[in-house]
Image (cartoon, rainbow, N blue to C red; front, side, top):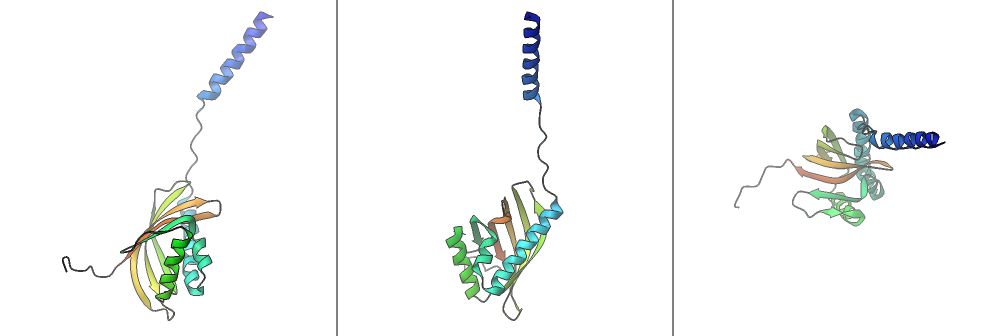
Length: 162
């Protein structure tokens, strides 16, 4: 009987030790092309928000704690800050923003950074300016959303000291 109990205990101990020694492989990052396609859909929705004057579409592009970090402006974050940004840009006459992704960096299952260029258009489809951007995207239950959105225009730099 002692042999059976000893054998059972040894088997149990071996099983516990083995289970803790097993290393699980990390979850593979998502496919870069599928992420690029998902981001492209949100970027198009962003432009549609201006075309339709629909701030709810605009907010749908961002995480609830998302933030816009425009050049020469304070950080505008959260729903209220994002709405301030949308209303100001809409009042300026922006009716579409077209994005071109250059590349994606640091792709994980939770975050990815997008580098790209943009062009803002008015109601007559005339350019209001071009620039570049970096967006830190965050994966949510609803899909990829903008978490930090930083951009600036390609205008000529102002002379130093003036």
